[in-house]
Structures are given as C-alpha cells and as structure tokens.
Amino acid sequence: MKVGTYNDLTPAEARVLTRVADTGRELDLRWNTVQAYSGQIAGYLRWLRRNEAIVRAWSSERKVETYLKKRVVHDRVGPVAREQAFYALLFLYGKVLRLPLGDIAKLEAIPHARRDKHSPAVLDAEQALAVIGKIEDSPWCPYRLMACLLFGCGLRVSEVLNLRVKDISLSESRATIRNTKGRSDRPVMLPCCVTIPLQRQIERVKLLWQQDRERGLAASMPGMDGLRRSRPSWPFALGWQYVFPQQTPCPNPQAWPGEEKILYRHHQHMSSLQKAVRAAAARCHLDGVVTPHTFRHAFASQLEWSGVHLTEIQALLGHKNIETTMIYVHRQQTTVRSPLDNALEGARALPRPPERPVLALPFPVA
Image (cartoon, rainbow, N blue to C red):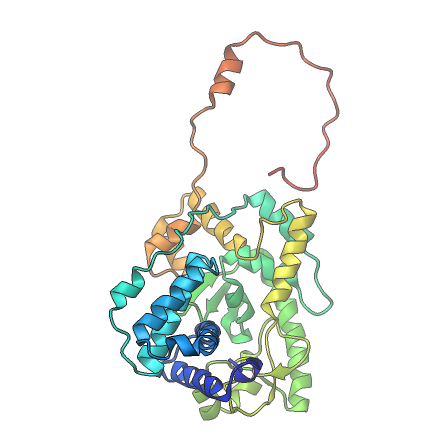
C-alpha cells in the first residue's frame, strides 16, 4: 500500500493508513488484504472529515454503524463490499487504534443486501481447448502455455504467476505450488503436453537470468524480506527466477512505505493474462463468460466427471474445506428427458428435408 496515492487525505489521515500498513505487516497479513483494508479505511476517514461537525461527539460504535448503513442504503454497495468495509473498520479500531467498538453483534446485524447464488461459468473440454487455441502469445510471454497450466493443473492465476524455476520438476512431471491463498505448499501434476513448451520457456528464462546477472538485477521476493536478508544470494540464483518474468524491471510491487526503491525482475502482471484470455473467449463467441479463473472450475468439473473422488479434487485445488471444493465442481446434467422430446418420439414422423452439407464450426456451440 502506497500512502502517497491517497492525495486527498490529510497528513493525520495518511499517518493512520501508515499505521494500518505497519500493523498488517506485524500481523503478517496478506498484501492484498492490507490493500483492501486501506482502501475501505480511507473512504471511512474521508466520510468522518466531511461530517466532522455531526459525528464529533458520537461513539466509535455509532460512527461505524452509521457509515455501514450509509454504504448499504445510499451507496448501494453489494454484500461483499459491505462485509469488507465491516472487517476493515473492525481491524482499524481493534488492531490499529485499539479503541473499544461496543457491541460487535449489533454491527454485524446491520441489514444488507442478500448475496445472490450465481452459478459460475464452466467450460467443457472442447470449449476449454478452443479458447486456449485462440489465445495469442506476445513476443515476450507465452500466454497459451499459462492457460494450459490453469486448465491442466487447476491453478489460480496468482499461482501460475508465482511459479519459479526451482518449483518445476520436468523429469517427474510435477510442480510445487507455493505462496498459495491458504499459505501451504502443495504438489500438482504437470500435463505431459506442456513438458517441451515449459522446457523451452525455462531456457528463455535462463538466458534472461544471465543478462540480469551482468546488470546486478535480482528476482523480486515479495513477502520474504527476512529470507532476502539472511540469504542475499538467493534472489540472484537461477532457481528463484520466475518462470513467466516481466519484460521491464520494476520496483518491488509490494514495497512497504519507507523501503528503498530497488529495481527487481518481477513476474508477469495478472491483467495481461486476463486480457489475453478474454480476447480469446471473444473470438470463440464466449465473451463475457470466460476468465482465467474459469479454467480452474473446468479442471475440477472434468475430474469429477471422470470419476475422481471429491477429496482428491480438494487436495489438488488446495482447499481446506470440502464445501469450497463443491463450488468448483459442476455436476453433469441428469438423465431426465424433456417432455418435448418424449412427445416428439411418439408423434407422426415428418418428411425429411433435403440433406445439407454439415459445416464444422471452429468453436463448440455453447
């Protein structure tokens, strides 16, 4: 979180956000969590400043309750944003400011919009292959190979981007996924079809690493500050280089306020892969449906359809709870037939129209 990006905050409010970042670092929170909390708290601080004459004498509980109601009733935010704002303010008062917040249960009971139960998009095998085949690689990054890993291994986008050379074992067709959402490493199988493309990509990384060594350029190691200090040679080792590096060196994207701005070789940005997948889906007439995360749903569903036990799918996806895995597994349609088909079967046979040549579509019909 870069406090300087909140240009409209007062110096006192900026100091509060600095304390939020420092506390998040002390508690070893995820970087994305600290960023999300900082954004919500910044909005709360702006609201307090605009309504200072009214809320000055209010208790902390009343301020938070009024702000959350305002977000729900007037700003019409969804349930996810409302919950995020609630936990961000809970973190602000409980962990940063250490001020009592009153009855938490009363705050949790504030009416908010009901979360809709949407069925995520899921692709069958033909559709997934069609989208992957339409992905266009850039001169620098093999997006198609990254999509193959998403679908073939069931990885999250962040897990593909954080792959390092030392995590790939081509001889065993295995990869170790680290820095996961659940903070636990897990092994996954590598599809045989990606062995040669991965080997070529690692060779390209090796050439880039040799150039970076001459320039004194190290690989970024977000969240490993202590390891970077105790093992200063590791960021310069081949094994710690990203499998999908960024073309242009940049400062540490997760640098905390006050840290020295040193150039590193970071991994590809998440948005570049997202754009490549969305463009390929549009070419397959599946735009608005497919994202990189859709391949993770397709991975789980394909395994379930092929008879793999749910607990094995849970282990491959890295979920702690089986209920989370159930969200990713999409059951196949039942064998119940439509009444229209049953009626047509018993109806009088109609004369057949003249045969027409069948044209093969370049993509499966949804």
